[in-house]
Amino acid sequence: MGIFVFIALTGIFMALPVVYAISNAFKPFNELWLFPPRFFVRRPTLKNFRDIFIIMSNSWVPFSRYIFNTFFISIAGTAGHVILSSMCAYALAKHKFYGARLIFNIIVLSLMFNATVTAIPNYLIIANLGWIDKFWSLIVPAFAAPLGLYLMKQFMEQMLPDAMLQSARIDGASEWKMFWIIVMPIVKPAWLTLIIFSFQGLWNIGNTVYIYREEMKTLNYALGQIIAGGIARAGVGSAIGVLMMVVPVLIFLLTQSNIITTMSTSGMKE
Amino acid sequence: MSSITTTKKSLALLDNKGEGRINGIIRELKNSRVSYMFIAPYLLLFCLFTMLPVVISMFFSFTYFNILEPPKFVGFDNYIKLFLYDDIFLTAIKNTIVFALVTGPVSYMLSLIFAWIINELTPKIRAFVTLVFYAPSISGNIYLVWTIMFNGDSYGYANGMLLQMGAISEPIQWFHNKEYILPLVIIVALWTSIGTSFLAFIAGLQGVDKSLYEASAIDGAKNRWQELWYITLPSMKPQLMFGAVMSITASFGVGSIVTNLCGFPSTDYAAHTIINHLEDYGAIRFEMGYASSIATILFVVMILTNIIIKRLLSKIGDA
Image (cartoon, rainbow over all chains, first blue to last red; front, side, top):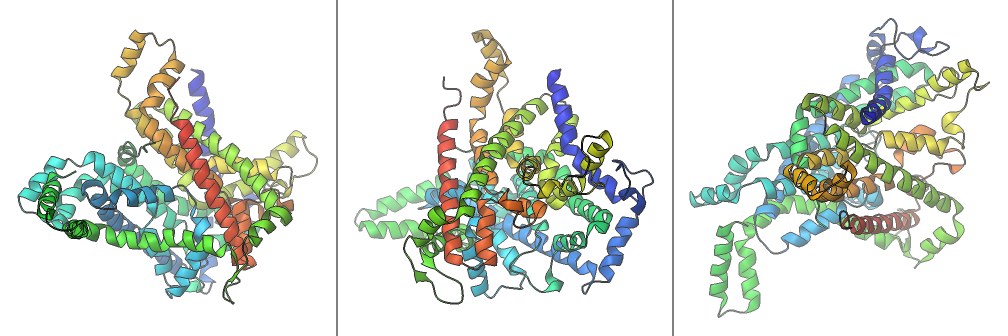
């Protein structure tokens, strides 16, 4: 019984800030500046959400442009990540060839450090490729994120029956054709997991050292600009925060059971 | 392994009898060319954006480099300067260790405990509770709401409540007062840290063979804790390993959350981490050689910590 009280209390602690943000997003201006402050909204209004568009219509770049940029980067980066990681994971999990083990061990090792560590060389590489102020600078590195490959390889190793691949080979199917027609449908839970991980990372990209042109900036960057506009923007800031949160949370909600299935094979050997 | 590749391989070995070893290897590589084509695109990008940068960073750490001029070799100067003359770096190390020692293990244990309790719930409630715990880690900048709750004026929720109760007489500058900065940032970091390892633990617990519990009851397991230590945790050891790697990497990676909550730099560097220090020299002062030596130290520390913790975890259920 005590255990359920504990989970209820921690659950409330986890949920409160989110509930507060949602509540703030619907507060009319006078309720944001009450003393003592009130947690829940009394007379909810959509004004903060409308204000986003009013504030943004005064900016150099139409708001829809930030939305497009963020969707474009997130979708393109995620699609490439899922396809390239799955191809590589398939070969590492189900083919036997020189170097397969070594390559996988190096990728596992790269899970053990944070990307900030390589930020400086990455900047120089991107600059030398001529990708400053190009979406490629954000999209292409996301293709080769190690976590997605790791999860996909573990899943394929344990969930793809060899016998099925075998009989397809005997029927004369090419590896490429098998990959798309047999492998990918079976590992659907894994690529749904890769989608949520990759998408939420890209979706939340804010200010980056690769993009300087205003019309190529992201939604999260625009959010930062509005919040930086001062305390008077607290309501609008919360409204954008809530909008930003909805997309990844919705994707997670729809794919949750698949993610747990994928995680069941995520284990690491000593 | 697919037996068709094995057959191909053994055929190749038969053919090889008369040829040299090198020819055999070349033949082997040729036979696997489809496999190499499958891994090539990913591997190329992985080398370019992950492996190569690690090597370049280590190289730059022994140079003076400001991007405008070519790098100049300076030996161990950067490292000597860091440890002997850079007081802020030492502060950053201290803060990073505090973050790593607190958020890392606490978030790991909480994820495990939450997953363990959630496992007892019915599937529908379980799905909902999972979302509640996991949502903060994927919600991007929503943690900025903490700056509204702990706003420095009396309209902030925390200040408002304390003022009304009469606990304080004037509002507290939560994120700019060096007494509160570190604990507050740790709380917010913990709040966002119930992530990938949490999901892995839920899956790991669901995969434990239920018949093992009955067997252990017959063998005389006395209580739930014994059951947890001897049956549950050993059964999900691979997930525990994976979760540890995720938690360690995340706890050493605390950086942008500090900047977003406290500004840059935080008051008196009270929450300045190695990552913040790295950003300071890399993105603001353009001392790339110096910044690279910071990055290299962080890299080595992360890898070593991971290896040590994995060693420790492999002992679970032994005694």
